Image (cartoon, rainbow, N blue to C red; front, side):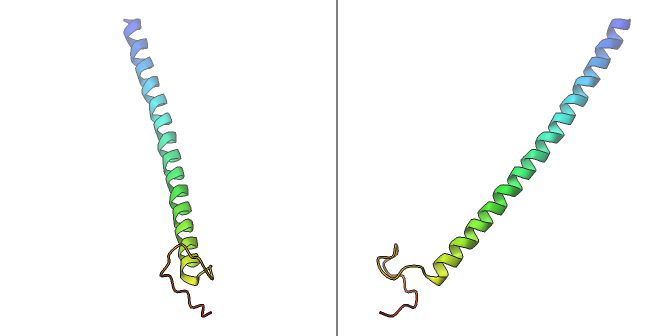
Length: 71
Protein backbone atom coordinates (compact mmCIF):
# COMPACT_ATOMS: atom_id res chain seq x y z
CA UNK A 1 0.00 0.00 0.00
CA UNK A 2 2.91 2.34 0.72
CA UNK A 3 4.20 1.92 -2.88
CA UNK A 4 1.00 3.42 -4.34
CA UNK A 5 1.22 6.36 -1.96
CA UNK A 6 4.80 7.12 -3.12
CA UNK A 7 3.76 6.84 -6.76
CA UNK A 8 1.02 9.43 -6.18
CA UNK A 9 3.45 11.73 -4.42
CA UNK A 10 5.92 11.47 -7.31
CA UNK A 11 3.15 12.27 -9.80
CA UNK A 12 2.20 15.40 -7.87
CA UNK A 13 5.84 16.46 -7.69
CA UNK A 14 6.24 16.02 -11.45
CA UNK A 15 3.08 18.04 -12.05
CA UNK A 16 4.37 20.85 -9.82
CA UNK A 17 7.77 20.86 -11.55
CA UNK A 18 6.12 20.88 -14.99
CA UNK A 19 3.84 23.75 -13.92
CA UNK A 20 6.79 25.77 -12.62
CA UNK A 21 8.79 25.25 -15.80
CA UNK A 22 5.72 26.12 -17.90
CA UNK A 23 5.25 29.41 -16.02
CA UNK A 24 8.90 30.29 -16.59
CA UNK A 25 8.54 29.46 -20.31
CA UNK A 26 5.44 31.60 -20.68
CA UNK A 27 7.17 34.50 -18.92
CA UNK A 28 10.20 34.22 -21.18
CA UNK A 29 8.03 34.03 -24.29
CA UNK A 30 6.19 37.20 -23.26
CA UNK A 31 9.43 39.03 -22.52
CA UNK A 32 10.96 38.03 -25.85
CA UNK A 33 7.74 38.94 -27.67
CA UNK A 34 7.66 42.37 -26.04
CA UNK A 35 11.31 42.92 -26.91
CA UNK A 36 10.77 41.98 -30.55
CA UNK A 37 7.67 44.17 -30.73
CA UNK A 38 9.55 47.15 -29.30
CA UNK A 39 12.44 46.60 -31.71
CA UNK A 40 10.08 46.40 -34.69
CA UNK A 41 8.30 49.59 -33.63
CA UNK A 42 11.61 51.39 -33.21
CA UNK A 43 12.81 50.23 -36.61
CA UNK A 44 9.54 51.34 -38.19
CA UNK A 45 9.81 54.76 -36.58
CA UNK A 46 13.41 55.22 -37.75
CA UNK A 47 12.54 54.17 -41.29
CA UNK A 48 9.56 56.53 -41.33
CA UNK A 49 11.74 59.42 -40.19
CA UNK A 50 14.44 58.71 -42.74
CA UNK A 51 12.02 58.30 -45.63
CA UNK A 52 9.88 61.32 -44.76
CA UNK A 53 12.77 63.78 -44.33
CA UNK A 54 14.86 62.62 -47.26
CA UNK A 55 18.49 61.68 -46.99
CA UNK A 56 19.82 61.71 -50.55
CA UNK A 57 20.47 64.44 -53.06
CA UNK A 58 21.00 62.20 -56.07
CA UNK A 59 20.77 58.54 -57.04
CA UNK A 60 18.06 57.76 -54.52
CA UNK A 61 16.81 54.20 -54.20
CA UNK A 62 13.37 55.22 -55.43
CA UNK A 63 13.77 57.19 -58.65
CA UNK A 64 10.54 59.21 -58.35
CA UNK A 65 11.24 60.26 -54.78
CA UNK A 66 10.84 64.00 -54.26
CA UNK A 67 12.33 65.22 -51.00
CA UNK A 68 12.01 68.94 -51.51
CA UNK A 69 15.58 69.50 -52.69
CA UNK A 70 15.74 71.82 -55.66
CA UNK A 71 18.98 71.71 -57.58
